[in-house]
Amino acid sequence: MAKVALLGAGRIGKIHGANAIAHPALELARIVDPHAPNAEAVAAETGATVSSLEEVLADASISGVIVASSTDTHLEYTLRAARAGKAVFCEKPIDMDHGRAAAAASELAGARVFVGFNRRFDPNFRALKDRLDDGVAGPLESLQITSNDPGPPPVSYIKVSGGLFKDMAIHDFDIARWLLDEEPSEVFAWGSCLVDPAIGEAGDIDTARTLLKTPSGKLCVIANSRRSGFGYDQRIEAYGGAGMIRADNILESSVQVWGEAGAAADRFQNFFLDRYAAAYRAEMAHFADILAGRAEPQATYADGVAALALAEAAAASLASGTPVTL
Image (cartoon, rainbow, N blue to C red; front, side, top):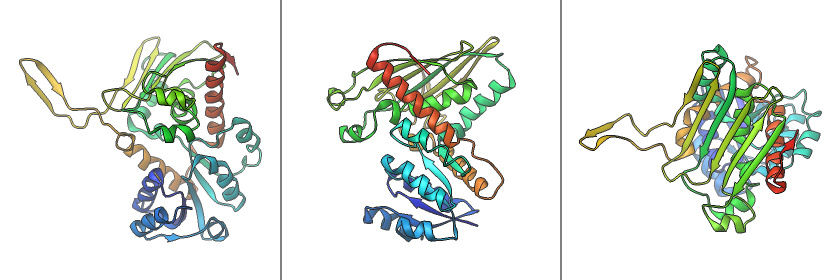
C-alpha cells in the first residue's frame, strides 16, 4: 500500500480522505490542517495521525500528498511536496495567479503532479469524450458547456474564491480544452450580476457567457450561473459534421410518475458532491495508479496552468469588453 498525507481537512479534504481510505492500495497516514478541530475530526474518522506539514515532508514513507487546503496554499504546498520527492494530487486551481503558476512550471517539469480536474473522470463526460474520439458525430465543430449551480454560495466565500472564472468556470475551461483537443486562441466573455446584488458588491459576477475559439475555427460556448433554480445543471453538447453527442443532467432516481398531466421525472441532483461522487472516487483511483507507477497524470500541472490562463483571459475580456488573444 502507498502511504499518503492529506493537506486540508475541510469539505473537499474530507471527500478525498474518505476516498483514500476506501481505496485498497492507499493508506491515509497523516492529516495536516491549521484548524485543529478539522484535522482531529478527519483523523478520528480515518485513523490517520494529525501532523505538521514539516513532519509530512520529512517522512520518507509518505509517497503521495493530497493538497486540498485553501487555494492560496496550493502552489506553495505543491512545490514543497515535489521538492521532498512526493507525488502530488492538487485541487484546482493550482494558484490564483497565472504568472506565478507559469513561473513554477520549469521546477515542476519532472515532478509527478496530478491536478484535480475531477470532471474528466465523470463516467458520463468520459463516455462523451470516447464517442467524440471515435468520430461517431464526425469531426468536432462546436461545444456547448453548461454549468449552473443550484444556488449561490455565501458572499463570504465569494470574497476569497478568486471570482467566478477561477473558482467555478475553471472546470469548464479544462473540459473545453480536453474535448476541443486544440488550444483556444481567442476568448470573449460577458458577465452580469443577476442573482445576488451582494455578489456584485463583493466585486464579482454571478452569471457569465464565455466564447472560446481555436486556431482551426472550432467554437465553444460556456454558460455559467451561480443559480439555476432547478438543481445542479451540468450538461455538454458536442456538435460534429455528422451529428451531436450530449451528456445530460443526472436525476435523483429513475422513477417517473405518469398521469393525465403528462410524465413527471425526479429532481436533478442538487449538490456537486453527489453529482460528481463517482468522479471523485475515480480520480483517487487514478492517483493510486500514479503512485504505483501504472499511470501518468491525466490532468497535469501544465493543464492547470492552461486553464488558469483561460480564466484570466476571460476576466480581462469582461473588463475590456473585447476579445483577448492568447
